[in-house]
Image 1 (tube, rainbow, N blue to C red):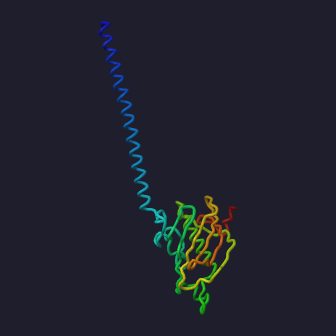
Image 2 (cartoon, rainbow, N blue to C red):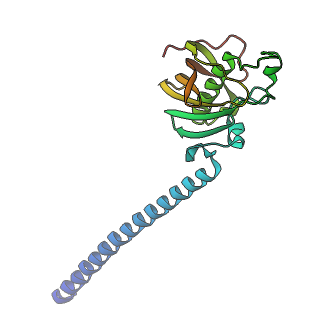
Image 3 (cartoon, one colour):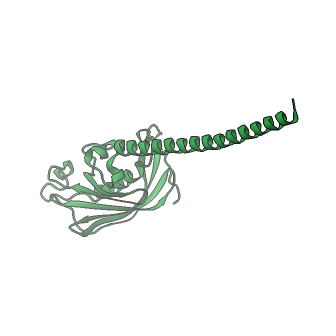
Length: 215
């Protein structure tokens, strides 16, 4: 091989190397870009699917069908009819329509029906349970139970025909426990207020196994 042929061969090799390098960079960039596009598309599709499948809580409210998917309570002890506002892990506003057909009015009291105060506190706790259980992926296996009631005050009687507006705010939140501050209003006036603490326990937990967690 002559010196001229050797120089020509080396030149072709350098040119081929440059082409491969350029193609390599281009291919690499295209692959990364393509993967990013796929990843972003998949994320968007997942988000859209989650929004479709998740209860309406993700949109700020819940109808009774969504409530029944989250709370384990059923008639006659389900005390939430609708959620009109929900800010994840922060607050919730729910409604309870109080009717003369409520079973507790048969004995409390027959001639002067008044909703028991403890059930208003229970309604506050159920609203808080909706807020918390929305964040629990395995909620079908768990129960939210009371561990404490503090500063309960009853300001006015709640009677048939009233609508309770229940506002609950999170004061402290841990993985399995929370402290909630709740108020129940009728016609814009406070009927009941209380601070409740609650805890998540497995549904198969033995009686008395739930212990209060300091919050």
